[in-house]
Image (cartoon, rainbow, N blue to C red; front, side, top):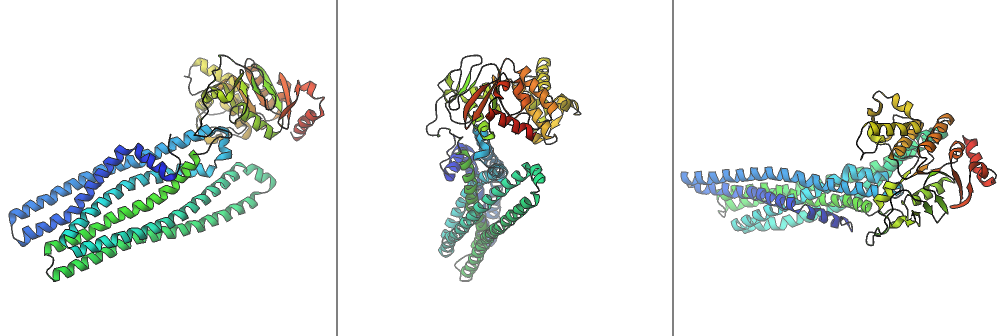
Length: 566
């Protein structure tokens, strides 16, 4: 498991996991930097011993040395490019794996615990910044080695020039580091506002039909414009900090270059440096802009990576509602017997027999809470086949108990793959089972109207379908999964009465030998139920058939309220 005790710890954990590639990247970066750093020195020797001394043999020898350094530098640069691509992509891909797995583990709690903005930010930019942090960290190591080579060569050639470089470089690094911290703070604010604005946009899109119905479009549009302008102002302040840092990274090394050249020229005029050394020092000064840029850019990228890693660790540290902490995970000690069993929730007194259709009439809040407990998405004392759900392996619970909320997501891809189980190969028998589920959900007309039938591609969220059509496709998918216990939350709330009647009959027919729980106040579904439970304030208040419970005014008020609304 990744180390999520802090952003820096997470980045170091990623670096340790890719240490082989990182070490090779650092080695080739050092070879590349060393080759560039030594080139001015070799050129200086070529001038002194070849041109000035008019020694053709020395000229050819030192010229070949320059050529050899060029070949080594070029080969090292090729290796660096290949390795840096891996260093950038692999940690980001690994991070996305962790985030995806954590999102799946959160289950139904993901909407309550993680904002859509967080997920979008991680997938769009954070994984790139994390990869770039490691990538430019290796470049920073190469820059440090190159700077060390040049500093030593300068000190050997002229202690005055070497001392100037040794004093100026730390000053440049301090200034750029302080500016990088300012940039990190402003980037953190920008990320927060981006996340909030993305959440607002998602809410508006999801509730657009409702907003149009109540005339709230202009109000929410005005709020979005206001948030957008705040984000724009924050982005401009962040851009100012980024521009100042970029200008500093360019101006200060250039200023150092001018100082080194001026001092070296003065030393040549006073005969303290030879012509070859002067050329070498100019090359050193020109080269210094490269390692300084690498080191300062590594620092600024690390600050951005810190912000990105903070977002990732916060998301990875999110626990499901009522889940045990990471430090003390609850072991799975129970073993379920083969075959269906009774599902029970002692907290509410609800019992779900191993066979038949059980309807639950309750408020929307109670329906969500009960479904989460029965599906082990929230900590509870619920049991299945007499064993506490908390003691059972989560994978086995998910395989046997399926919770399908009213807004379950429809994924993009061929309809056959979306509706059929991914772990079961296709064939005539599987197609027959799929069509049986489609018929039970009254969705045959939807499929037959598509140009490619079941092989037609569907957009993410099924946005090409109406709300009622999406609901029928969700039900078909749940019925085809064929779990031992199927828990449905308002599966017919967006369809007309005729379609709802066919869906209710289909659920009862197809699930006759399985356990099915339906949270609903629909009379058509309640008429098909083998037993009905009335839940008030989180506890079962009455049980019986739909006809018998109509004598209870509390039950009748809930059902009649739905009938009047319909």
